[in-house]
Image 1 (tube, one colour):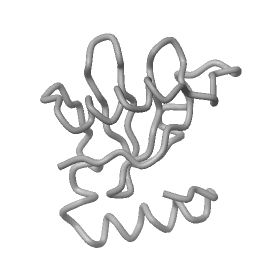
Image 2 (image 1 turned 180 degrees about the vertical axis):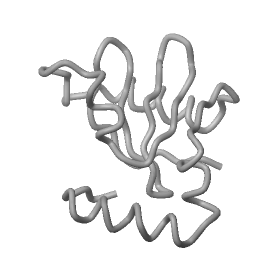
Image 3 (image 1 turned 60 degrees about the vertical axis):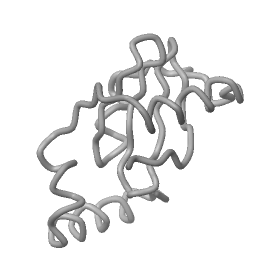
Length: 103
């Protein structure tokens, strides 16, 4: 089961957040869908400067609910393998640490 960790940016009802398992997700609040990646930078190119970092409690709660209940999930190959292959996880965790990520 996917678990929300922290909301990072809200832009046009799309919430970029981290997950407890070490990955991150872009959650579309309108369509109730999410896309899972490993590196936040995978999503940052889609966000213009000035995304809202002061995210309302209501949006955080809706984000958590979507993450826990939706079956509309997109996930790339490495984001899936991150949980299955210890070598891939170690490589990405090293990249995250070098980039200053804390998730």
